[in-house]
Image (cartoon, rainbow, N blue to C red; front, side, top):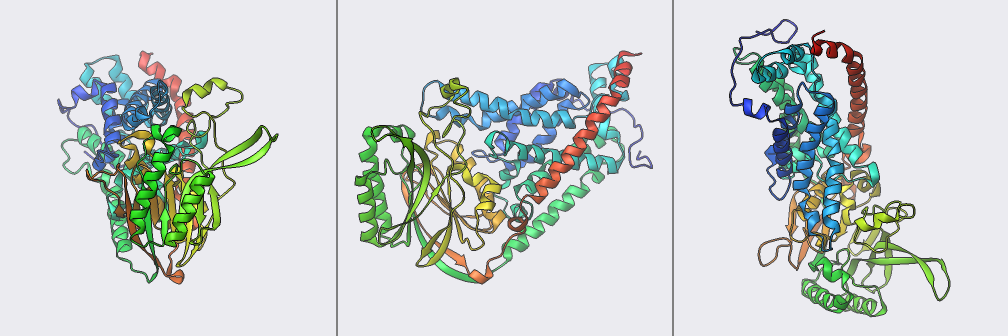
Length: 576
């Protein structure tokens, strides 16, 4: 029966034999939850699993609390990361990939472990009594009926919202700590649901992550409501009515946004080259001439389509020496085309004439149709252990965890590239910079027409890494209301419109995204006076910031309660 306060009164015991084997194998269920979470992302992209995986991860820790809850969450997180980031094993070097794969997975598993530890209800009086006696199944049943499951409806609803805010807060921490890795946020798993992802234009991808976890926890509470009061047919409805109502409203908002029309402006015709150079060949100086010849041949085929702008990806140019410079400038003059490409750059910082010292940068360069240098951009967000080794001066042994011999220096700030015919303003990004929401938003000028990302995913063979990178980046277009052009050495070279659709993409002879080829895309830009500024672009991570504040306040209160009640609960469990 439903009690007047919104909770449930005691109901006749019911045997749910199908739950029993799951609950008695807590760590196996946590591992299964982690694998479900990994499967929600590419390549499998089973997006529906994202809506149940958080609840499955929390369920085996229900009524456990403390160190056991942390270990359960860690087991699930480790399984998820080992499965999702298997492609780190494909880096073409000896020895270190497996160390990096394990180390990164172990580090990232801390975040779901902390989430489960802070959210899982600790043993209360009901479960303490069950510990003192009874069968294993009766103990499991009593534990599942304790904690939030026994609270009034309003408190249960707040608990579910707090759990979602806590998840978002931990995603934000992961995207900032140790230079940050906001790869595969939970919301990115829904990239194919165009109406749903439009909420990112208001809240950022954090809003979608919140909605998924909130719904997942509410479904868990609905299941526990059925377990607690099986005689009440609609006992579960109150648990899901709020999140399901918000999901419906988000879909309505998304459909309205997708139906909006704006006045068209300039038409920019772009040719993107995907050379698909294996990383081992990039490191082999003996192959420089061959790869550059192939790059020029692909470019000439694309230039037959008469584009306004030719784009080469990151790491496409073997070296920016006089010979390659002459070949590039001759190509530009011959076809009268703007050109944007990635190459290494350097500043001399000291030394002597015989032994100069340099700072190296991962850079992008823009040349006009007269082959004149116009502008350059130096990458700001470097890949840890891929482009630099942290603390290498004090901890030199860390160099053994990376295949790089030297390192890059981060650039000073964002850049804006202007093409004059037609008049288009580009915001350049390099490598995985397009997965950082705050960095991309702060890089945009008021008059930016197009985001352009130059990247190299040739490190990871034909794996899920290319897809995971691309679908995370898709949300930058939705968040800021600006189309995104991605030019990859190996991966998803594509055009993403401002609403998150993949409008154009390169596929090879095998109908995959990994082989060499080129793409010519016509990008219809908006009229300068009719370009909408999204709420997210104006206000940034306001929603995620609110989640962080709620999570910190809730976690502090939760820890105080546990500390205050620890002695009393311990006495109850011990039977004193």
